[in-house]
Length: 278
Ligand code: KIV
Ligand code: NA
Picture 1: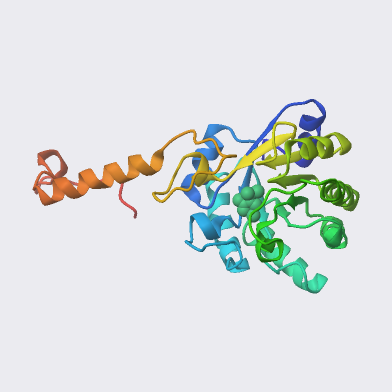
Picture 2: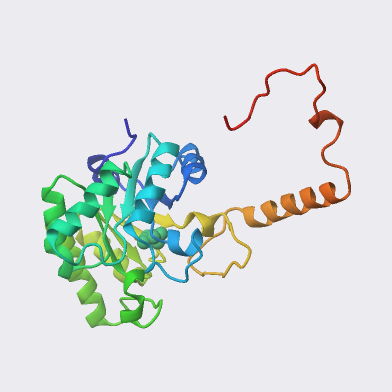
């Protein structure tokens, strides 16, 4: 039913066809992204920052991810959907990890999961892949470890760090990951990793040499008011301003007695009404 699967994805990388991925968190964002022609959707735990109002991804729970995944799946029935395994749900027993994966697949209706980490989680990735679930890796800046990393910083800046990222990427490919997100990695190192691997890399703040790109929905359409500029983001629309202007206009017209007007009201002769949330 989906337009894409992990085999096609690998072919896209090998054929040099760029992969366009975006995050989605609910029915309307998923629907709009699918209609716009994205290759893959990510129900990211950036949910915590851009939808739930937390200041990191750490408070996001498995229940949050399942709930939002399900709404995304309803909005994008033809798109390959990946969901983040949230903070600390894949570092305990394998049973616990697989239980979380099962919930995202069976209750969240996604097609694959993403996990942050390199060689240290390779065994976990391999076990999930063995269970028949595609896994997307994620290395470089891994926001769930922000307190261990000492902030949101560019990764791969010195030779030792670059070598570690390369080893992590190889370990994830070896474990069966179908792709790897590279977040805030220098362009040079991200390109080197991409060349080394058979599986695609999906970059965010990782330069032009990746097999594809991913951006956070709210960043790329500027869907917030206290928007913080990020250099790796390009804003392709400014819906935050449009929404605020729309609501400002509504408030003004209600206060000014201009809305509702003649065409919005009913007389006794009217019957059924379309467009209600019945
Ligand atoms: O949660 C998220 O949005 C992500 C992307 C930034 C890759 O993990
Ligand atoms: Na994430």
